Amino acid sequence: MKKERSLFSKNLDFLMTNAGMQNRKLAEATRVQVQSVSNWRIGRNDPEPETLNIIAKMFGISSSDLKKKDLSQSGFATVELGDSLRKIDVKVDVLLEAISMVLGEQQKKVPRLIEEDLKALVNKRLNDDDKEGIVV
Picture (cartoon, rainbow, N blue to C red):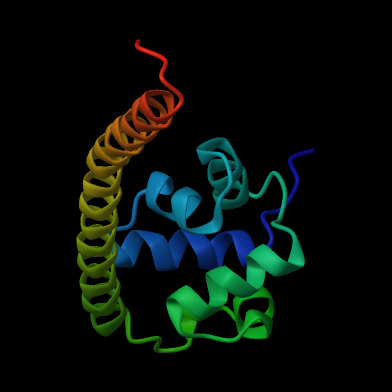
């Protein structure tokens, strides 16, 4: 006998479908494997309570509603939700790109700083050796 999908599973599938959200995006946001999201959507298992809270916040609902209320029958504003999530998704992508750029710039600076430090150290050492009468 096949297990009945949980209300959470149905709600998550409903919300993600209406928002046009792929499993990968939710997996990234909740820091889980894509397979975990797939399992939640088909009702194989449910997320940990902390993860459930993150999902609820992403969709702007309470974790209680996500688990216990049939959102497909409650007049939930799916169009508005989808637009909001798309805007959030764009903002997240922009932030990730900005972070990558900043990190990339920092990575470029590190070798330069190391090189400058090494040159300063070598020059100091050479100056110290000159003072001692040692020629390198």
